[in-house]
Image 1 (cartoon, rainbow, N blue to C red):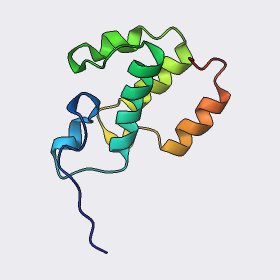
Image 2: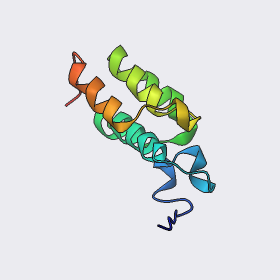
Image 3: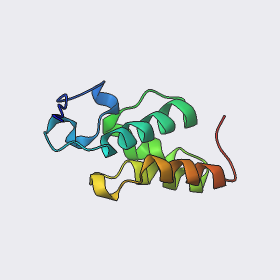
Image 4: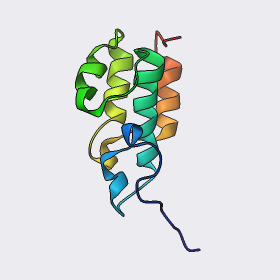
Length: 97
């Protein structure tokens, strides 16, 4: 089956570094999920790639902040799978509402 990938899918503020390349994997969605989780759910700000590290540090729960950092790894293979994220979220002592 032929597989086609869209170069630069979605809004750039949510996009993984590799979104502009042909080296896309499913981990591109993990990165976007991490940005969404951090900015929309945790700190309630629009994502700002130039302030990404500052925005991550605004998270108050260290476990949650660690999960977001794992999702935002620049190297796709270092990011968790979506199943790992789901499993980890189930074990978090606090999930932002």
